[in-house]
Amino acid sequence: MKRSADEALVDGGDIDVESHHRTDLNKAASLLHRTVTSLTASTTDDDTDDCTIQSKQKCIEDEHMAKTNTKQITRLINAHILQQDGTLLSGSLDVSNGLIAAIHKDGSLNDEDISSVIEVVDCKGRILSPGYIDIQLNGAYGIDFSNDCIGEEGLKADDVLHVANRLVETGVTSFCPTMVSSSSETYRHIISLMDTARKQQQEEQQVGANILGMHLEGPFFAKTKAGAHDKQHIISPVKGMSSVEEVYGIDQQNIDIVTLAPELSGAYKAIQSMTIANPHSIVVSCGHTEATYDEGIKAIECGATLLTHLYNAMNPFHHRKPGLVGLLSSEVKLGNMNLKRPFYSLIVDGIHVHESAVCMAYKSHPDGCVLVTDAMTAMGLCDGVHSLGNMKVSIEGDRATLADSDVLAGSVVSMNTCVKRFHKFTGCSIGEALLCATLHPAQVLKRQSSLGILQVGAKADMILLNDQLDILETWIGGKQVYQKKILN
Image (cartoon, rainbow, N blue to C red; front, side, top):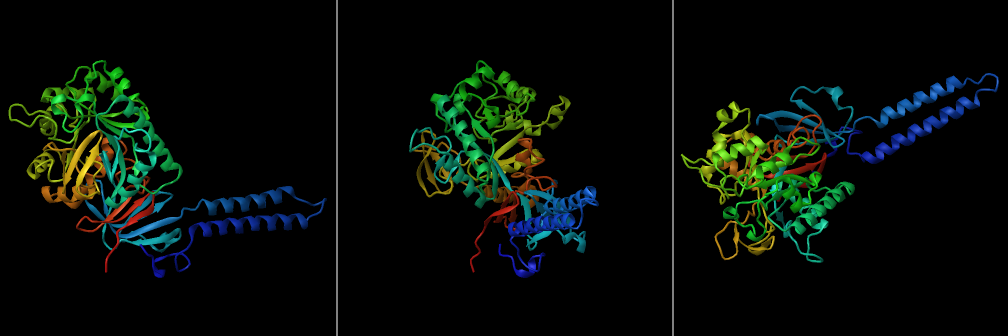
């Protein structure tokens, strides 16, 4: 966004922050040198007061430290700021050092509050929301995160970074790269590669969406609910956590979510082991499953907290056999067991789930709704045949199916499209729709203190939207990384 001269609050116009900072350092150093030299020259061996010199030198050093430690603030004004309850607060938001430094309600600022502001951004009454978090993304823009090829045709760290850099156009500021059921060798190779990409992104301070830990979708599935997953890789975790480690070569620091079918032999023990409290426990989600209602409750008792793409690849709701879907309306029963209802993800592309089923789930458990794209390699590309793991997928419009079949194979819609359709289908408020793509996925990952929320101390990962929920700007770590081109 171009800043006009009258929008800046320092020296009457825009400034080069780094140059301004360097100038302050040089001035302070020069002042220190001149003062010490003057003091030394004006004293003799008889009357030199070392304490006085040291005291004055310390004062100058303290003044210099105060200058260099002063917060340099970017202030976004005239915004409607998303709150945790889904309401929109009219006010302004301060960003400093990549974090949210303050939030001001309209009318609460005074003239003294502008002393540290180096840039002002006028949001012009638009919506300021946390950036979207996609916890299930199989790939996009021609890149497949399950690509098991070796050599030139294989997945590379730069490919992952390319996706991360493009996702900001859709409002996504953090994502979990997701793999479909694969061989143990493929899991181990790609988990390591994602770690490399994440470190490269951080070291090079790239401006793309944050690469979070992986979402490993499979291979511990019911074969009857394989969907687009290759059945040759699907197995049961018969040895509990040992089976999990054999497949993934597990490095918990690089894994955020594992989706499995809880009814399989050994699954409950695996859930308990993965979710036990430790420096980085794994979120276990139930999906691609034939689990009954009671088996779902057992999974929650063992530590599962999420249902993967609700309705899809699981038993349908029946009034005598509610299946996992029935857990959404079981607040009382689970509460009496000192358990919480699980979060559930929804693919709201208008194809995977009928709008009436979207409404039914949301009205049953609004605080648990998490929007995901489940997008695959063809997101952002034209119609045609593309890859998902070692499967061929046919794309026509917003519909992705296994080639020569009607089996759905992930989606090709972006998160901003899912949010728009969810808002339309449910009739919820704009703020409530935004929570399903921001705060709720952050809560799933137990990172709601830093991601998916606009509060002091949280990361300044934000998006600016209009009332039609179009993405106008994306900010990551307090820096604008995307701005929609406005055609005259």
